[in-house]
Structure formats: structure tokens, C-alpha cells
Amino acid sequence: MTGEYQQTSARWRILGNIESGPLTVSQIARSTGYTRQSIQRLADALVEEGLATYEPAGDQRTKNVCITAQGKELLERLADNENEWVARITQTLTVQELTDLTRALEKVRAVLAEDYAYRQQRQQQ
Image (cartoon, rainbow, N blue to C red; front, side):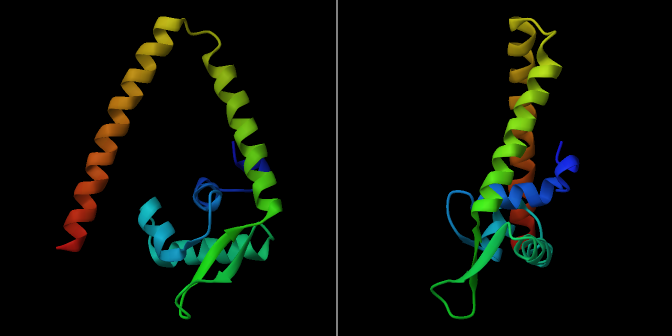
């Protein structure tokens, strides 16, 4: 879905994270589970493409990553594209099948969240 816009899912996630307000690279890394170094490289690329900017944070040593108008526009197009894709792939499912699928995906999400929390805890030890 993101390929036709020449974006990876990781870059899409960063834009989604900063859509509601500026965050530091470290904050984005904690939120996404990527390394700080990976987020830094991705953020640098987004800034270079005009999709994000850096602004000073409260601490002089850190910078906030902020989404630009161009970044917001791209995020909207990606979301529209995703919504169209979901509509296409689910149009043959009944209401019951969609309900069952939603429940199953919620279970998978919960397991993934638990696994992520477990891995984060192990890293801190």
C-alpha cells in the first residue's frame, strides 16, 4: 500500500506518530519498537523529502521531529488508500465473518502487545 507513494511502513509509522504533535527521536523509537538509530535515519530522510522538520526541544541537546503540511497530505493519501484496500478485500465477507475476523485480530494484537512489553522489560534488565 505504501509502495506506490515510495514510503515504507516504518516511515508511515513515524509520520503517524508525529501527526498529533512533535516527538523526539527517542520517543518515537520507544513508541514504535525500532532502535533510536533507525528512527534517526528514517527521520533524516523524511526531513530531506520535506515531509518532516526538526525543531528545538526543551533540552538543547535534543530536537523534536515535526510533521509538515506535505507530510500530513501524504499521510491522508496513505490512509485513503488503506481504507479503499480494506473495503476491497472485505467486500465479500459477511457481517459475521467480519466480526469473527475482528475478534481474531484483536486477540493477535493483544498477544503482540504482551510480547512487546515482555521484550521491553527484558531489555531493561
